[in-house]
Image (cartoon, rainbow, N blue to C red):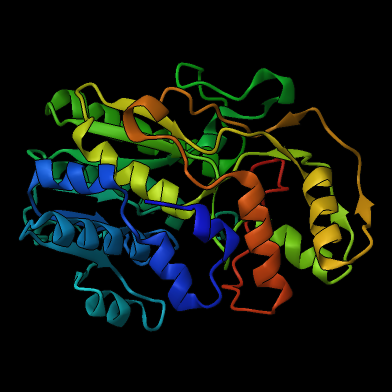
Length: 348
């Protein structure tokens, strides 16, 4: 995929954006050609799922693979199911905490588990634990003969010094707050069934995906554009463009193992909030207002182990920032789902 013209001409509307986010790389097309099987995406109705499912569909079509891409969700967001159907993705409504509904899901050659619960965890701890812990049990039992790629989060490591280069896969979890603790539980359930039932698995610890309608960069650009003070107490962060995260996830389907393989998924750079905001302010013609004190501790991950297997991100941080400022500055669509990345105590 030649990205040079794309970097010069950022997406101008939702249609162009979703086209870019779902364009498969040559490597993704080759992966799905080799796997040549149906794929089920659980929790497809969230922020990542729709364009990931579309990327899988497009990759299969370009590879000449006549297999199904099946998206499973409760489909609470209006229009998501219809959009997926229009892209050639089959859809099934399912509440994944319900055992009978999970048992009725179709067979597949590969499963991608995107389901999870984060925002609102402080208000609904019972939903947090049921979604993040019971669902992996039911999914593992239903698909005990099927390779599974399961999403997790880099926040379970806890904060590390910004000079460290980020947490590595072999670092022990240090969860802070119920969400991170439930994430560790989710991983351990998947790990148990991977080993007990010999299910090939990959657990992807994501830290943080972004596109032009949501993400850390959208949060920051929106504040800069509105002349709002930006809190810099969470001084540093990682970010990865959503199409890169989608592509890496789809390539992960052929790298499962038992016991489960764990890989961090994020961009290669450690970004500083003050630097990013000054860049945004210059592009928008806004003066900067910062609040809070800088910290040398942050949630950071190191993805160097993933790149040789899943590919290096194609969209660099500077491009992400420029695209985001252009989009936000033009007042285009915002999903209204702030990341709350400044939270330091694990309370979401």
